[in-house]
Amino acid sequence: MLSDAFTAFAQIFSPRLRGVLLKAIALAVGLLIVLAIGLNVALNHLVDIPSYPWLETTLAIVAGLGIVLGALYLVPAVSSLVAGLFLDDVADAVERASYPGMPPGTPQPIARSLAYTVRFFLIVLAVNLCALMLLLVPGVNIVIFFIANAYLLSREYFELAAMRHGSPAEARALRQANAVTVFLAGLLIAPLLMVPVLNLVTPIYGTAFMVHLHKRLAGRRRSRLIEGA
Image: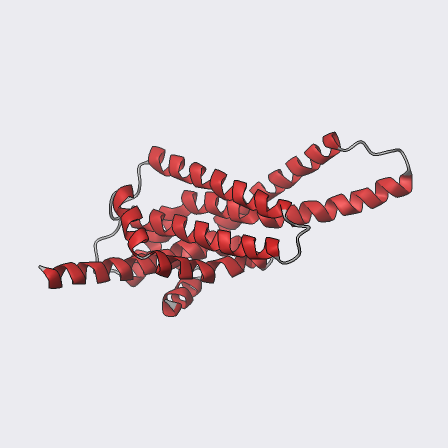
């Protein structure tokens, strides 16, 4: 698994994926800016600030820091959305580079891909907003943030990669049969969310990593079926 993680991280900066990486980063930054503006507008409408200059300045600084922190908690949701949009580009590049002798995956129908991506975006957004509400509970919010995103992102990235080679039900079954392995892989993805700048490459890294993991687990499953035949 560690070799898959290192290989995936190296590949996201390769010429094959550099263009996709830059587009994904640009989209993620744009979405975070839009969400931050939305948070700021909501804050201004919900909070009635008395007209004291010193208080306005203090609250503006606190609000700014709050928006930055809030944006950090929104990165996983943005990451899940970006991953769904660029999945096939990333997966195709990784499969061509690392598995040239194997049949390539089939891109998902646009409607199914968008529905799956939006559904996961809303789930991840809800979970991370809940984690944000626990901000005043020292330590607990970080643990929840880390574990919840390790599970959610590993689940999404793996199933998206697996659906290029089978139905959604088959992808889900393969993930469930290897639930511990997939979750442990998620623990190698989640730390990136806490590192500024690097958290922007999470969708590309997570997708590439899960393409490798899927190939390995699917190959192991085929070997067991052949041995049992």
